[in-house]
Image 1 (cartoon, rainbow, N blue to C red):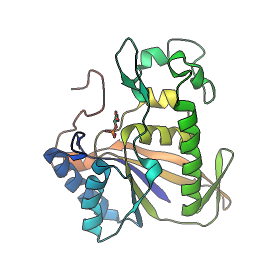
Image 2 (image 1 turned 120 degrees about the vertical axis):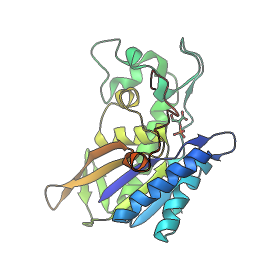
Image 3 (image 1 turned 60 degrees about the vertical axis):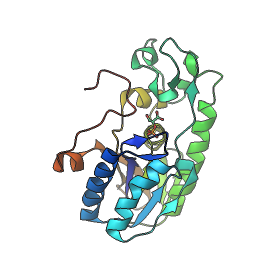
Image 4 (image 1 turned 90 degrees about the vertical axis):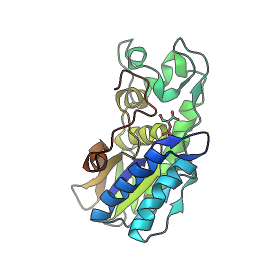
Length: 233
Ligand SMILES: O=C(O)[C@@H](CO)OP(=O)(O)O
């Protein structure tokens, strides 16, 4: 199975949709996804994800299912020296300021995350992910997935930047704080997870493409820096 984690196109947050530029991105994305086709389409219930997804569903003549657990995570740090931040926007220089670096388990000890909801939200996301992937034919047992049904299906999930990185950390069993500060998903980008099957019994999620925006380049569209707080230009 190939799982496509897709961040919505350029957002219009106040109006719960995407901008005119986002519509162009979503159209380009639909063209790209139509090349190989999709077997199932899922989306977050939020307008910016749904309005991005519709171009692809229409291009392929498919319906979609809403997965409520894939909506953007409500995780804000109210007071930091950097202002009010989403948990995934805490600077890498803070996350990496102490040695040893955070691990899969110790990231919760970073002072900014202590006493916040992020450990619990991450645990909930894991449960939802496991239930979703079991429906797709993969049952998580420890860090690997038992193959319940071999499939070459292509499955798209239209979702969000913060959610997408958090899910990626779970799928790859990486320290979530290092994934948050080490990656950024551009609007309309496609991150591809191959369920790597090296035996008949087990599969392991393997990222074979991160934040791909080749559809934007193909259409002469720029990568818009929405949702990144840094010297991106
Ligand atoms: O809430 C945010 O800060 C952004 C991600 O950086 O979310 P979304 O992907 O939904 O725009």
